[in-house]
Amino acid sequence: MNPPPTRPGAAGHRLMPVVAIDVDGVLNPDHPATARQLGYQPHEYDGPDPAGQPMSGTVWLHPDHGTWLRELAQRADLLWCTSWRAIAATWIAPRLGLPNDLPWVDLGQGGGIRFGRQLKLPPLYRAVGTRPVAVLDDEFGGRDPDEAAARTANGHQTLLVPVNGGTGLQRQHVDLVHRWLDRLVGQASPLPQRPAKGGSDRRRRRRSSAFDDADDRAGGEGAAHSVGDPVLRKSRLLSRQCDTCVFRPATLMHLAEGRLHDLVTQAREDESFIVCHDTLPDYRFPEVKPAICRGFADRYSTQALQVIERLFGFIEVNPPHQPGSRAGTPEAVEPRSTE
Figure 1 (tube, rainbow, N blue to C red):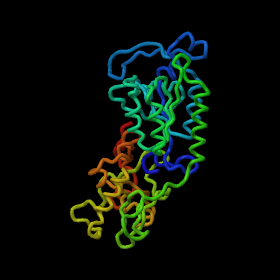
Figure 2: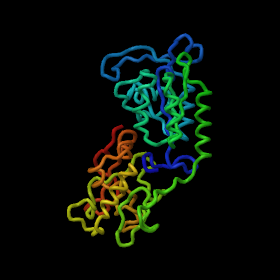
Figure 3: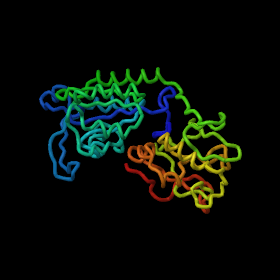
Figure 4: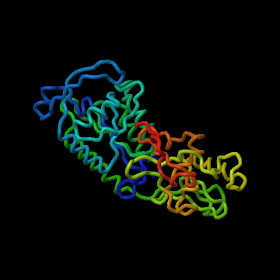
């Protein structure tokens, strides 16, 4: 897919589903006595709260939750949506056997219900964009189900899973998410291409890439043009503009008049990005893996680029013919990432 992660969803779903997880009331029940009866185990936290202030107390966690969430992680991307923020990744996750680098949503003003709406949902929806999302939380407002239904009707599949804060996450909640994921698989189908604004099929554009103007290659959405690194689960971004970048003042690409404007316009309309022409597999360097054009990324902040940076991060790679380095390989510096 083209917002990250770039690995395809189940059965060809272009957008990988997200499961957003709350902590208090979901993984950490509100009633300690009930939690103990249900098999939760106490863990003592003594450290900073998300604002950096001292905090201590008992957190009740259930070992089964880690197993269940790892099941979901085989089919979707897990995302922390909790007032614990980064602490959920670094402290909660390891105690459940989950990776300690799972992304988390910056909730801004925090959670809670106001005017019938859970305040965590707007920043969550902004973060996931158009990707399918299931939300495990113990608090939803009266308007939230209608807004989730409206998002689904608009093509942004949304599932709200209310969890009893006294008992926390139960198997039936996880099974509900699995059934929802099954439905996504059944509904998976190629999305229609945006019609060209005048001109033949050769001028139709999917997610925008920079092309050789001479033969007008189409930049597809298939695995061959994926900018995702399947091991690091980050998206490749050129560390600097390539020698023939279309955004250089005196570009060597010799694009037809108005062509760059069309490419940029299409990418921005799609809330996507441009792939560097020198990294396309059918261009000059077939051994190089596709990477996001640095010239475009430095000039435009589309939804896809924002979601990549916030949730997964970038791995910066050298341009194909950077002197003294292997084409398309990671820089010797730390990759840019928000994790």
